[in-house]
Structure formats: C-alpha cells, structure tokens
Amino acid sequence: MPSKIAIHIVLIIIALLTLAPFLWMVGASFMATGEAGTYPPHFIPRSPTLDHYSGLFTGLQLGRYLLNSIIVSLSITGISLLVNSMAGYAFAKFSFPGRNRLFRLLISTMIIPGQVTMMPLFLMLNRLGLVNTYWGIIIPGMASIFGIFLFRQYVMSIPDSLIEAARIDGASDWRIYCTIILPLCKPILVTLAIFTFMGAWNDFLWPLIIMTRDSMYTLPVALANLMGEHTQDTEMMMAGAVLTILPVLVVFLALQKYYIKGIMLGSVKE
Amino acid sequence: MAELKLTDITKYFNPDTPVISNLDLTVNDGEFLVLVGPSGCGKSTILRMLAGLEEPTSGQLYIGSQMVNNVQPKDRNIAMVFQNYALYPHMSVYDNLAFSLKLRKMPASKIQQRVASVTEILELEEYLKRRPKELSGGQRQRVALGRAMVRQPKVFLFDEPLSNLDAKLRVQMRSEIKRLHQRLKTTMIYVTHDQTEAMTMGDRIVILKDGMIQQVGTPLEVYHNPANLFVGSFIGSPAMNLIEGKLTEAGFVSDVLDIPFPDWIKLDEHVGQSVVFGIRPEHIVIGDGIWEMDLVLCEPLGNETILHLEKGEEKLIARVTELNNVEIGRKIKISFRLERAHLFLKESGIRIS
Image (cartoon, each protein chain N blue to C red):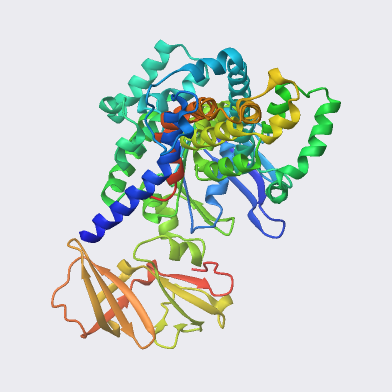
C-alpha cells in the first residue's frame, strides 16, 4: 500500500510538471501587457483582460487564419479518411495481382523523410498553379501510408465470411464498404481522424512553403509570424497559442472514448 | 426450387495440385444432400463454387437449366449459412434479416411481413431488437438460418453450420434444420466433417476425399455397402474394424486371425492378393465362436456396450446390446457375421466383397 501511494505521488508531480506550462500559457494569455515577464512568475492574472484575444482578431486577422486552418484540416481529415479506408480495405480484402508487392513498396516509402519530398512537391504544385491555394495543402495530405496501413490491419481482422454473406445477400462492393466495413471500423476511423486532424492542424513547414500570401496562412504559420513581429508581447503570443490548441483539444476530448477503444483493439479477446 | 448440376468441375488454388478434380454431381430438386469428408477434401470449395464465391478452373455449374459459371452470387438465387454465422455485428436481428430484402428494394411492408413469418418459424420474435453479441450461440445460428430463409432462395447452402455449437444444441439444431427442409422442400446442400450429421440429415450423402467423390448414396447404402476402404472406415461410429492380411483359397489370413470363408464367398480371382477385412462393431458376435480375444476395455452406454478386444497386435471394437458377466482381462470368444463383412483390396481400397 505505501508503495502505491509513493507511485501516485510521483505520478501527480509528473502530471503537474507537464501541465504547468500549459496552465501558465492559459493564465498569461489573460494577463495585462508585460505582466507575464514579471518576477516571480505566477499563474493567475492580477487583473484578467481579453485585450490580447480581441487584438488578435482585430489587428492581426486571426479569424482569417483560423478559417484557413479549419478548411484545410477538415478537408484533409475527411478526404484522407475516405481514401485511406478504401485503399486499406482493398489491400486487406481484395486479391489482385501484385497486391503484396505493391503494399510492401508503399510501406518502404515510409522511410523517406517528408522534408526530402518537399522541394519536388513544391515544384510540381507550382507548375499546376496550386501555390497559395487550399488545394496546395490538401492534395499532399489526401492519403497517408500510415493511415492505409492502420486501416488495412484493422480490416484484416473482419472475417471474410461477413463480406461473402453480404455479397450473397446482394450487396455491391461499394455497398459492402459503406454498410459493413465502415460501421465496423468506427474505432479505427476515429483514431485516424484524430491523428490526421492534429497533424494537419499543427503542420507548420508545408503551409509555410506553399502559402506565400499572408491571407492564406494557417494558424501555426501566423503564430510563428506573430513571434517574429511581437517578440516582446508574450501575452499576445500566448493568446494565439491558446486559440491554436483549442480545436485540437476539443476534437480529442470529444472523440477520446473511441480513440482509446481504437488503440486497445486486439489486445483483449472479446 | 431447383436441380443442381456440376459437370466435370476442376478447381486449382495453386497450379500443382487440384483441390477438386473432374467432379460430376447432380443434386435433385428438393433434395437434402450432404457433402462429407475429412478437412481439406474440397467439400467447402464445392459449396463456395455453387455460391459463386469461388470460380471453378474448368467445368460447368448449373442451377436449374441456367449455367451459372459467370453469374454473380447475388443473382444465383441461393442463400448460404456460414460456420461462424457471419451475422452483421452492428445491426439488430431485424436488420440482419431484412438486409438482403432492403437491397432488393422490396417495399417496407412486405419486408416486415417476410421477417415476421420467418421469426415466427424460428421463434425469434422477442430478439428482433438485439444485436448478435447479445444472443446465445443457438439463437445466432437461428438468425443465420432466418437470414437465408427470408430470401426464399432456390437453394440453401450450409457450410458446417453446427460445428460451433455444443453437443446438445447441435443435436437440437440438427433436427430443426431437418424439419425446416421437410417444411420448405427446398434443395439443400450441407457440408460437414461429422459423419453422424451426414447420416442423420442427408437424403443422400456424398463422401469426398482429396477432391474426388468416393461414393454417392443414401445413408444406409453407404453404411452397408461402402464403395471402398475409405468410405467404410469414414462412415460409422465406432469405426469399422479393419484387419490387414492376405486372401487364400481357404479364406482370409492375417498374423493374428485366420478366417475361413464358407463356400458362398467366391473370390478366386483375388487369391494371393493383399486385402483388408472390414467388419462393423455390431457384426461381431460375442459369446461363442472359434476366435478368442482379451477384453481390455468396456464402455457401457446404457442402451449398448462398446467392447475393446485385443489379441497380439490386433485390436477390435465390438458393439453389443446385452452383456452379462463383463470382466476386464477375461478371454472372450467371438465370431463374425460374415454375410455383413467386407473385403477391400489393400492397394486400391476397392471393395471386392
């Protein structure tokens, strides 16, 4: 019993340490200009203010950046779920010549760092006239090998007889995918949705490269610019950071139940 | 209802070994046909080819007068019941039953009517809102049966539907399926590896081994007149006693038992050949006879008793209905009802008597 208490104390300390910067960020975003830099550092603002939040929207077009981020992240999440799930289903349940070889080839490309492909990708999209457009961010994120892999592994655990039964019942391949495969894959769809949304929302480098016009910036890019322009304005930067993190947090908390189910999959015999 | 015909069907999964070779089979209209054989004999492959889930490498499949080689499963008017039930886990019992009818765009009122009539027969009315995971094994299997029945197909295909159930439920479902057949009078093809199921359910049985038909016949035909050694040993429980030996002019000779044949057994053309003498446990007569064996084990089943007899290397199993004075280790005199015995050629397995 004492050892259990000790473990809990250690865990609580680690949790507080992890949480502290986040709490300070939220606290500082409500502090008056200059207050965050005073010594000793404190968490609770002396006279809370929303000035920095309103400043972000009025002076810095944050609403526009927020909209950009939402459009891009939701599109990538939606389209990539569709493409990854269809590809994963095909790799798991359809037999076609070269299936395994093609899948191995796909997997092997995962060792190529994303940064290496950025230059050729930029040139390609530039030639297609997609620089400074939403598609410039969405198209490269429309499918992910990791997503296909994850989906394939999950679909493989669905018995073939279920698909065969549906086929005999008169369902077409598309109908089987929509009414049998997708509903059964809810946990993995949610897991993939969270991964993809967080990845797209937090992505910094690619939007920075492909979006050269200020009005097309996504939140992380805009936030980085904020750091450059307002180096001294810690409180405003923190307000920007809170706004950036908020949607991800909401998505995660809302889907947490399914997400954990997805991660736990296969570990327990049902 | 429909007659089914398989003509010269061959199926290869890999180029070297055929799973099914040159199979010819006709299933009569309204017949309950059982395909039985050890695992890997190709019985499920035949069923899957009939369902359209596998394509035959060569040969023709007919349902009624229509050749169905290139017809989609959904257009074959067949229904299949799977070993693992294959119920849609995210749908309620009602939706599972109604799924195929919805796909056929049947009006909702008619779907309700069909589902209601099937659930009444299968006594599933109170479970309509439940998901498959909330049902017992027997109930799940009944839903799987119901899903096949609502379609009112020409042919029912069963792929070992009872092998996931416990022994008692299996016997119960066996008679339910049989009763269903008597009621619907639809052609049914039933795959199993369990010879008891095959014997009790089938109008005719097809015994398969290595993708080839060994014998087709009624349960009693294949039991009493097995075409070859494999059929003889596969059908019947406990299995047929088999003793290897040689055929001489006087009769059958083995290391342990010599069995002189009466005059009416004429096997002159096989004299000198290696043969296998086969006798079913119930055709061994206990109590008097010229052979003496040790009683090593006795299994009383109530209505009958199974005796395990040994002499040297040779082991025999006898089945008797009445038995007095059983004493393990005792020597027992036995004789054979030779008119019910079988002789198989050792090399080819073909029955010669």
